[in-house]
Image (cartoon, rainbow, N blue to C red):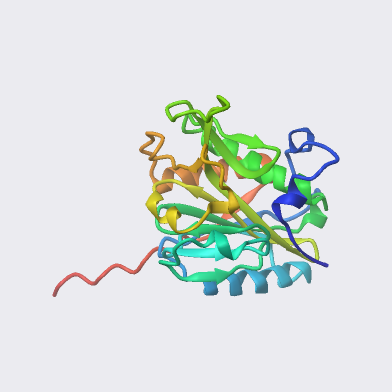
Length: 264
């Protein structure tokens, strides 16, 4: 069984995601999830190859579940529902991602969390899983005084922007602060979420993010909202709130860029 989860699948009836279970801890006796952080930018193809191999190993019972936090060099990814017309300016490399969803941007200042979990150990329900991912992000944002919102017709996490002009109908502007796109193979997830901490938001102008053309809907980041949160601060909050939603995690040794040798 392999599924790419699209917006239409994750937001479809019969019930609102707000009514679904927001906690997906593993069954009793399951080992903790590995928590891995890479501080050097990771090439996209390298990350996808690792996720696919790890998902297969998890499904076969040969590896532990893992969450991998990283940044990518500037790039665009094209989900399985993406329309070519939504790629406005291919100024960065474009990758076919295999995940559900449309176009999105990854780059420095954005924390990507690739989530490789066995839903059979938790709850084999796609919509509950998406709701749990959103809950994780919403709880993390609350740590920094930001109110994250779930919208039934849009996957991801949004914030209201009363400081921006309303549309002609008087509706308040909203910006997306975190994207979610997943793929399942034998009920093991890969891909995951992307939370904007302090990326260059102008890089989003090369695409129509997630296919959204409504002028009142944009993109934002913690920095854009006035937060001075550092990446390490966000990582700590992500770990804390992950354990509230998905259960225990064990940090692996942090992978940091090599430091130059001091001059002799």
